[in-house]
Image (cartoon, rainbow, N blue to C red; front, side, top):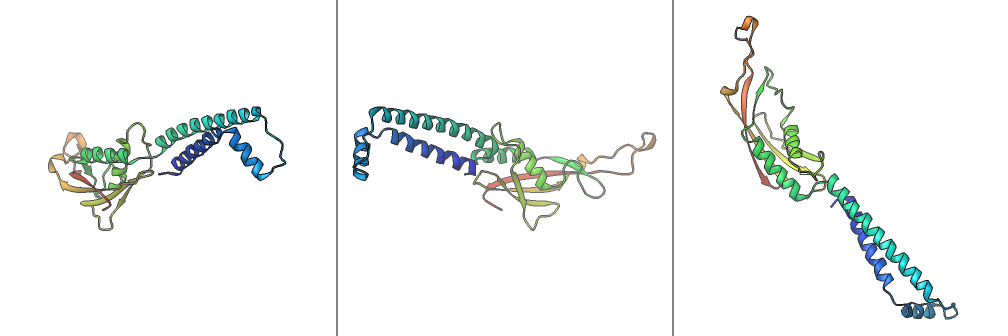
Length: 202
């Protein structure tokens, strides 16, 4: 539960207390005042009416603010269901994903497996999920051919382990044309990803 959601819950509890105060009978308040200060002047009924109107108005305003706050919180943080759906859709998208690399072995389509995974999960977050806040933490033993990424998101309590494995795909090699349409001397090597996910950290 993020900070904004906690504040909204506290505000609702406070509004409940205000409504409870507005429901206290006037005789009970008079008896309580008399017990504390017997010489205090008697409160007129109109004072209780005004107090009840003020307490109810404050409670209604607080509930409206909390409802709006929950809407803002939903748009600025992830929940478990949003992250679960996004991870599964991102994994399905990445399973079979093909790309090429240059002579240094770097892909021209993404920087690393972490950024690729974060971008895909954020893409499938849905309308209420924010476009940011996704973190793919790589394992210390990851290599260019295999990666285990712990995926989390701000506001969500769940975590997922996304497994990516790269295999050679020669049919996806790309050789740009050379001078005068002759075959080029440089070939970009093609690769294919296999992807899967499970609950929990890697």
